[in-house]
Image 1 (tube, rainbow, N blue to C red):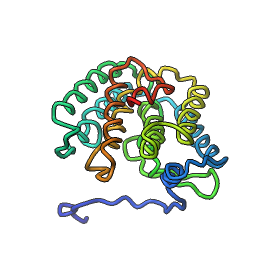
Image 2 (image 1 turned 90 degrees about the horizontal axis):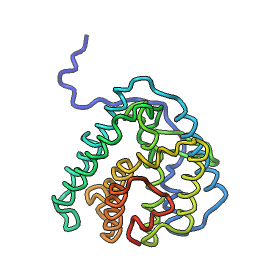
Image 3 (image 1 turned 90 degrees about the vertical axis):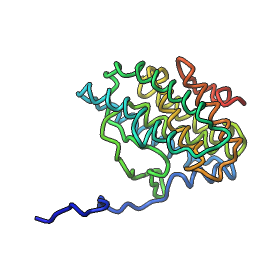
Image 4 (image 1 turned 180 degrees about the vertical axis):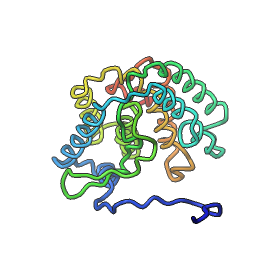
Length: 252
């Protein structure tokens, strides 16, 4: 036996994966707005992958309740992110407190929807997606658990189309808007999960808080942070999400 009493950190050794981060594609689209057929194919491949894994149901209703609770209260999710915010004029304590209160209300709105428990990735953002030269990809860091609400995965990816577009032009438009709307339409048609529009708000808010964070993105212009903040409040205060109204939610 070898004691692990003095261990400081555990590392998980996994198979090495080739590829380039999907974030590089979004950075290119932010900088030149030139949409290619490969961009469309990659977005479709990611969408279809989510539709496929989200077809696998979970069986533990209590696990769904736990995942919704963790969305709001976990150290890596909404309350953990707000606790990590440094002092900033756009984010006084009263603003972050109001966001938390709205998210707690959403927890009570969602916790009974245990029928939504599905297989998920759990952290489906561009830096966890490696593409090879085509639309073939490998996923990294499935660290938040095998099951959850499909809205988590869809919000995680599509918020990045908005994020990079806001950096480019201060609104959702051009190539990144095309990918955003294409992804949402394709996913809703293939999954037939229209209920997602009634539950996705706190997942969108979580990703928005990460993107607006002065700690996570210290060089981000405050104009972008403000639009993300406006978006967060707009979706949390709406009964359902409409992908066609993103610019309205951002105040643009």
